[in-house]
Image (tube, rainbow, N blue to C red):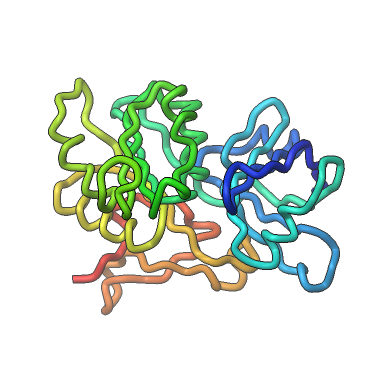
Length: 257
């Protein structure tokens, strides 16, 4: 469906935020879902691009994206009043759990996929990881939403020097009235390490496995990820992240032997 651009602004560096008027998408969107965007009608942009829904309310859909190629570069030049074609919301969302305390673990612009959880969770803890201060996103926004924010950067420019997963033991050691339920989104190596840790420590949660997508509706099998399958000789099967995900229960993610 055609959606008018209300705002398309540079946040910092290669990161942008775009807001669309789309009451249909906004009314149905759930945390962790995405929209498949056709940028314009030019032949070289025939394929849609998937973008996590950062927020959706009052008929407005907000996306946060990074310029990484021709498509996102073209999107960054579009102005207020122009139109894109949105298909969505797509995919399996996160499950807000009021019986747990939220522990949101984010790498880079995985922050976009987890921000909407703040609308349905009464606070919690957010662990933000990035290569450097230039890649940190939504730090103030999470704090303003009532979440305790801890930061790790690879170069040590902000917070702890190292990987964001290194912050988990300290947080888990804190006393809490409720057990933690982890929500995660970020680079695949981070998510695989997180899935392994969660399995080892028996921590429940859900992870968003973002893969390169083509059709976005489960037809092309171009975005498959490995999930556990005890009946298979290999102990895994391929799941389409666009329809069975992008959010999967952590215990279902195949991490090998």
